[in-house]
Length: 556
Image (cartoon, rainbow, N blue to C red):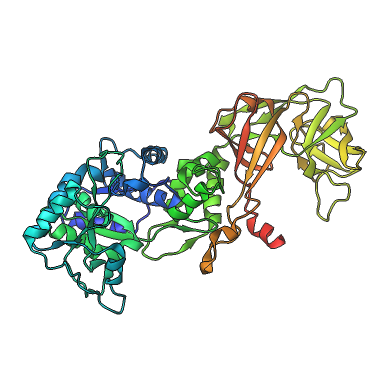
């Protein structure tokens, strides 16, 4: 994988701006709202904004658009900072909050009032919406639209002073109630919010600016050259330009829209993600089934894989639905190169080797990676009693089964060829144990002419360590949850998490630290979960060895 930049229409615009000397230096920003954790759609914006700044020797600011404090908190601020750092980006000393500019924003609003371009409106929120009009019908002027500059200034100062209750008055831009763009029909610039403790300004303000007013002015104050945002803000661009054109800001940023990331088998709406968390459908924002950056990190994804995925999907103006398989394959490719191999038995079935030679080794050498000599070898304990996975044995094998059957042979990975001689069952008739014999001439090698179709993994019974393994899968069963207007929860996958206790792993894995990744041979890629404690390791499945989702869905 490579972080080499791919060209796109935004880079072409920047190239032209630099060539014409419109800008001396590129300045971008990533402007999250601290009302939830970031998801992979935000990762696309992070990679784009910080990546462009790096490639053009410019700067990228991290700015929190914190204009809605009743939904925001410091926990989200800190989680967002951690996510950006984890993805490999550094804003250095350029950490800002929109609330840093509250006094300046208020001053610019006064400028608009003094120019006759803003007025205090007494309509309720419902009445304002009712007068807004439709896509085919113009809106109706507010009865307060023609208040004098003096009256508007007086009322606006009193709004700031806290004289009026929530919803009693707003400050609106005076633009055009007949505009075909509804966003220009006298949009609200300020609203009253009492009783809210802002995480940055405390109770200093009861008057808060709207996002559409705050964002362009914050960009202009920071000298942003290219304000990159997703396509849903395309219709807001005229208002963005109107704001910076009519107040005395020091620069005129250019807003450029690109397609947002829509990913199969998940939801990207922060409202729906919040619902999943608050209703306990998932265990939290960092649940490994969530599309959040913290969830992907806990699941074992690497920042390099996320950056590569964002590069592969590209930056376009057209909305599209990205296959989940592309994300999974990108993660799989990254881990295939970097993750050491290990053996773990998820559904243990005991085997007794009845004729193990007295001089058999007590451990066998195993490569840590089949393609990476630099990762070295390890010594894996081996004895007369081992565990294999129960799925690797069948009394009545289906067609094409190439593992262990009564009277059949398989090779134990890096050890002997064994033959199943006897099946021991419990009182209920279930297979409890296998008695097998080894071919002593096959330790770690294939004698000439000897053909064994199956190779299976194993763990030594005497030294193996019990572990819990969580098999995570896609959170939803359909590519577009909730499509057609149905409740998105109807499409939840009841098998998105399977917890296996009593798994057996190599003893060397018992001390693995949270965040350590490996491939369990023949099972998939796994990571040690933060829930792990000494002596009780917990592993999360990051991704399977190959994409089997569509086949499993077709099979029911």
